[in-house]
Image 1 (spheres, rainbow, N blue to C red):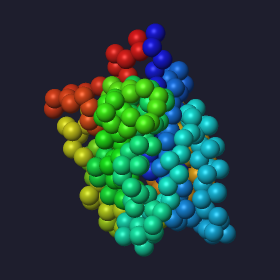
Image 2 (image 1 turned 90 degrees about the horizontal axis):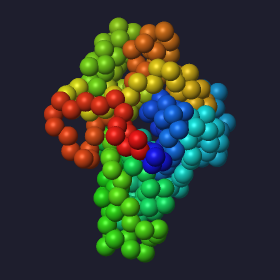
Image 3 (image 1 turned 180 degrees about the vertical axis):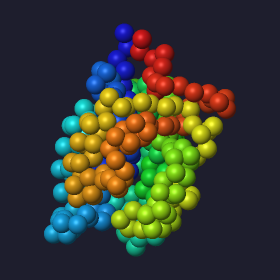
Length: 283
């Protein structure tokens, strides 16, 4: 039986938990070798109330939180060691060490190296919108897609070992806009502006989400809900994933304990549906 391996390439410390953490927890528990690569140090992020004193050493604080969270999820942590570029329109976008300012070919090479070393069948990353148009999320998409294809091509990055290896599947994290519309309705009921969501007020929820027909994979993680919550809580400086804390946990667990993905490779026909990223792999 082939060892099943998954590699996720995500932007910030906490993206692995606040995002598809349920998927990672489920697969790790099922024996999949789960690897999580985080591109940036999170240094330009904001802080939750009570963590104001951590602002000057935020990268260090978030590194410790990340290590704890990935351990809870059951994964192995890798870092690409770029500087956080900050939120949308943040002056930190222009910092010379920011992820979005990185040499693209060199950054692709870092992901190629991980793929050739780990030899995952499945790769997960952000989609071309970054989920909510965050520049670092989009940058992950920009480097991971070409790395997915370059890793198996001996003519590309020949100086990077070990031997070329081609993963079988590439998935993008994505949200169904049906639930986004429900959340927007609830925000407005509470008097919240859905175009200024998040601690930095930089997320326009009316632009988030994709049509359900464009989603291909639906991963139920209800049995691992508490693991995801624990991993999210480890990111205390970022609020511990409590943005939807006003929704009763019983309702969250019943309605939201599912991660959804677009399958980018191999291409799939419209209407294609699957419940396992490893369907037919390693069995």
